[in-house]
Image (cartoon, rainbow, N blue to C red; front, side):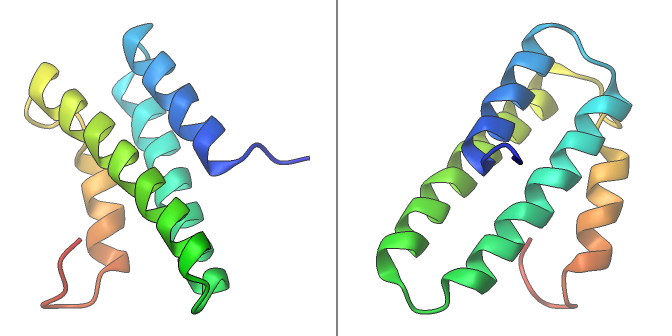
Amino acid sequence: MEPSTAELIIDMKKMYLDGASDDQLCSRGTEIYERIEKDFTLARNDQRKIGIITVEQKAFEKIIKQIRDARHEHALDAYDAFVARRTAPGKKK
């Protein structure tokens, strides 16, 4: 069985604290980003599910911010490039 989005987010936080490489963090970040994107699509108009996914998304964004603040400027370049490809022009990531 696949780990939940929340488990992946918790694991990413642990990876970051344990000193995982930039590539590992970018890989996990893209996995979580895709999962959140998929979860929002599957939730459709279920406000309870959307609320849960929104909380997960905020937790994920918090970890991304911590990594950006603590690591070098280009630590998340691969993740940023992935998000840029997935985000429509003019749409906020």
